[in-house]
Image 1 (cartoon, rainbow, N blue to C red):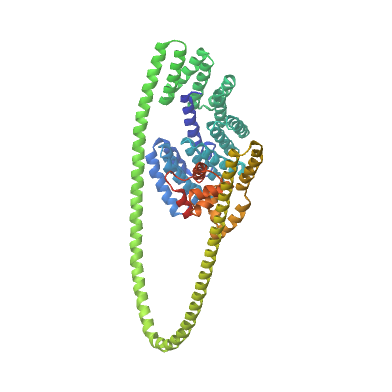
Image 2 (spheres, rainbow, N blue to C red):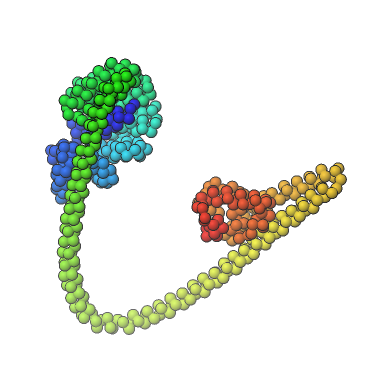
Amino acid sequence: MSLSRLNKSIFYLIAFCLLPASLVFGQGRYDKKLQQTQMLINQSPDVAYLKIKSLLQEALNKDDTYTVGACYRQIGEIFYHQAAFSQALDNYYKADALFRKKKYDRETAENLNKIGNTYYYTHQYDVALKIFKEALDIYNRIRDKIGIAESMGLIGQAYEKSGDHNRAFDFQNKALEQYKKAQAQAGIAKIHENIGSLYEDKMRLDSALKHFKLALLYNSNQGDKMAQIEVLNNLGDVYRKSADYRQALLYTHKAADLATRMKEHYQLASAYRDLSKTYNLMGRNDSAYYYSDAGREIYQTIFSEDNKNQQMVLQTLFEIEQKDNAIAQFQNDKQLNLLIIFSTILISILLVCLGISVISRQRLKIKNEQQLNEQNRVLYESQKKSLEFDLRSKHLKEESLKGELELKSKELTSHTLHLIKKNQLLDELKDKLNAMIKDDKRDQRKELKQVINLINQNNNQDKNWEDFRIVFERVHENFFDRLKKHSNALTSSDYRLVALLKMNLNSADIATMLGISQDSLRIARYRLRKKLNLEEGENLSAFLQNL
């Protein structure tokens, strides 16, 4: 599928889906005012925004949750059409919260599809797919065939963009089945066009032609000339890819003529570009250049006008929003000032009443103070003794814990030194045996090598590690648990190295403890830094000491 036709497909799919199902298929709960503002969204967005804001304020005053949610959704659509996607999502989610709160299932699902379309248009296909599926679940629950079909079609589009063509075909066919059950001609035509696009992407051009022709038939029956233009262009693309240039020119010229009559400049430019490609393949370069130049001029004009209009509308919307915010702030400030004045008066009255109460009860208070003072003195003495006892107990407990920690630290140090000396002794013994191998007779070398191998095996055994680890964890409680939060990929050798680094042993002692060379130790430290995801320049030992 060409990039031009793909962009056109996306544009009309989103434009189609942005209309609520309640408006497209004659269902729903929109009243006349909401229908009027809906019609104004594309025609005059700035006027629509003012009317919706007015309607929103009325609904807020009447506590009409449904209308408030519908207004937020329409405001979201206005921002969406102006490519202000952040503001669009903000208003869509406000509507979503209200619809869910009141359990308006159909409206919630329609709004979810709008949210999904916004993410779809910004190329966040995974997020869009998740939201479309949530809308589909709601439609299935309320058995809304049109809604089910719409969501399935959108899910198929999201899968197509994600490169999963098998699932895209599956959901588009399911959507087609649902639309046929509901006898929704416009929906059937759209899904045939989507399926044709999928077949075109797979270069199954005969199947693509079949579905595009069905789409054209349904659109013709509906009298939807805008949709006919797009399908005619699609048919021209497929015939061009099939090298049937005569049919390609026939359908593309039909699309161009219809676009000219309807003054659809974007579709006309697209048709001109397709004609240029066909004429170029036919070797008619003069015609190819003519249509290419004409299409480019139309695109430049459209882009310039759309960009200018979009900037003007966005500026107007943001100015209106700023004014609304300023008015709201002024009203809030006014209410706050009234609240302050009322609070001041109320506090003054309360102070007067309090003064009278204080004076009337002063004598009784003086009389009771002596009794209370005596009771407080007794209570204070009791609390003082209790606190002193608690402090002494706490101090003794701290001393006991401190002594126990020192004892455990000494035990760990002693255990570590013992392992170091043991490994050093084994290294010395290994060196002496190696020297004997070099000097002694050949027939004794085999036995001496066996002894060295036994030393090496003993040097790498893990039997002392478990004892060492038990003592280490007594001194450094929960250290390994905290370490695991930084990485789950650490091996038993990594834990040994971490424990020795935590004890601040030097590299020579660590190498001796682990039975490896200094070079091997450096490599082990490097791999450990990688597993802990330490940034370059961050000190490994300092990290472990602070852990």
